[in-house]
Image (tube, rainbow, N blue to C red):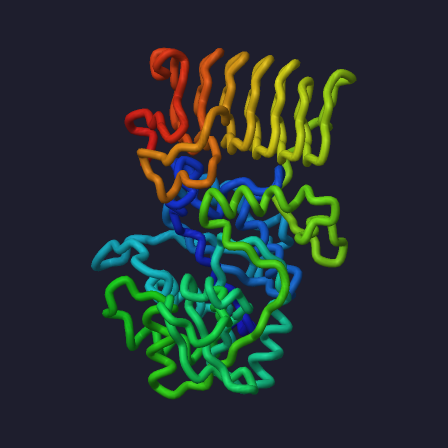
Length: 424
């Protein structure tokens, strides 16, 4: 039997419903980030940079883009005969077919995969956070503390701690209590959803709670082990970490990349972020174009003006068009004379000539005010925006729209157009 010191299990099956139309056709970890990356690139790169060469990626919701992106793991040097990366979707068993119904349930359903490697330790990761972390340092901390479970935790403002699972520790970082989204938090150390388990402890806990409905690490496994008296430690992390779970945090994390001195540096040679790269021609910026404080992807043709924006690969921005404070994803085609202000335009969208996106005054979104609440105009993948229309703020569009969808040529702030059958 192959024996690995530590393997990683990467949870990448979530829909990411708070990203609205951006995840209508792709899982959240497959959403584009920073012009050329996808969100899942960050934990995968952390794994190989930390010396972890065996990663199981658990997929479920809209997995095709994710599967295609990961392939056999070549960009991350995870195309290995012994280990490497393995995509682990739900599968039909001899007696029943069962979807993953919780984070811990997903891991439980892949016990056989983990047992193939007989690991000493198992690292549990989420596939939808932006950060750099050396998991080997966390493992050293786990060993030094003779812990059964180590939870990565980071300090947050105490007024925000109630949004997280919170750990309460003693002076040696031993966890003495754990609270899931407490109303009155007793600590500002928030769980990052990153765990190292000693293999036998994890296996026994998963088997003990296999009948638990929607079994989850934060709600069930951690409290169960704490109640049984297992030794739990908190590994404090003080670097950059962003949960891009809302349109606002997703937009902010992208905009932080174009700061003069970005807090999150994509260009460090000693800790590279790897991704699948297509062989495409260089970008072209015409003599008449203006580009300021922006990232422009390969293969893009810029004839207009781009300010404080992230532009993906294969994008065309036509003559006379102005793009400000926006995220334009791969293969978007923007016509001539277009205005885009504080917009997120997903992959393969076509924007007609002289359209205006992100105009008008603030208004609460009527379709889903909790999701579309950040003054953004959000357009989902593969959409079509006809020429000469105006689109307000806090808006959402998904599908091939036509002039008749816009009363008097306007989608007013706070309104949405979701074509039938597009939101799956």
